Amino acid sequence: MPGKQPVVQNTISRKALARSTVWKRSMLSFAQDWQLYALLAVPMLYFLVFKYIPMYGVTIAFKEFNMFQGIWNSPWAGFDAFREIFQMKDFYKVLRNTLLLNLLDLVVSFPAPIVLAVLLNELRIKWFKKGAQTILYLPHFISWVIIGGMIYQLLSTNTGLVNHLLKAAGLKAVPFLTDPLYWVVTYVSAGVWQNAGWGTIIYLAALTGINRELYEAAEVDGAGRLRKIWNITLPGIKPTIMILLIINIGHMASIGFERPFVLGNPLVTDVSDVISTFVYKVGVQSARFTIATAIGLFQAVVGLIFLLSSNYISKKVTDQGIW
Image 1: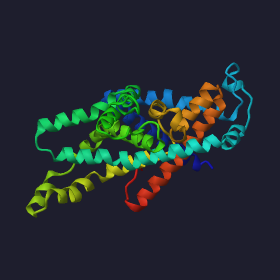
Image 2: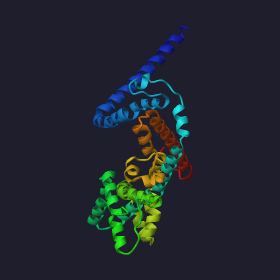
Image 3: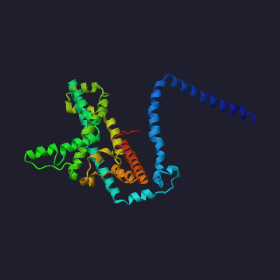
Image 4: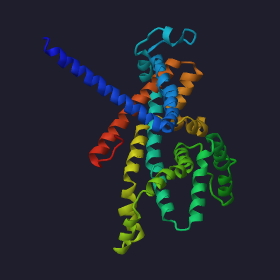
């Protein structure tokens, strides 16, 4: 035993020395790049305050929440809120509408920025390219309340400008906002108009990373513009496309509140009512915060399943993924 004591002491001292070395290196790195760490602290603080600390509120889904008693003192209710949600007929309708509208957005809206970015990348007149890009992403900064007012002014059945022109031409008015099918088309089209230009920024940034020598070599081989797009441009931004596709699939169960709420009306509730508006009506207007929190937790779990599944499939099929 006496012979083992120096060995144990040496082991402890080596571990302490290693910890001290790591600590000194960390402090040296922090001293050299403290500006970068200071910049990183801002988004970390944002996520901590607005993303992680509020996760404590998820417990409301499992309690008979009383705002006067608070989250901690409200009695536990187990999974009663989830049982009540799954027994609601309207819940399955809004879940169907949410998935359907998000799927249409994915099919129609997701490729739009890619097409616009490729077209802008092929332009040779710089001033026209910059002007077109500015005009395309300006709608992103317009509120959905304003966009909704514009759409009603243009597409309303009785007073809309488009239907006035159709009637003047001897054609029938089109119920863009009152017929479920036309409403869905209007909803998706409005989303493309607002978001497509902004999405091109990401793909244009990815396009700058493609080696220009590849295009020169393709020209020497006699490749045309479409062939260069297909064999160089699209493969060059493939990792970006796959990452954004996976993220979009992960949001399949969640949907923004503004667009369906502003564009919806009582004549198209069968297709316009989605989970976010359902939470607003049932959870907020009726002050049933337990139900609202349970639906939000359900959305998060389903979204996580979609995200993990799409990332797994992407890794198997294309060898591209988020991680």
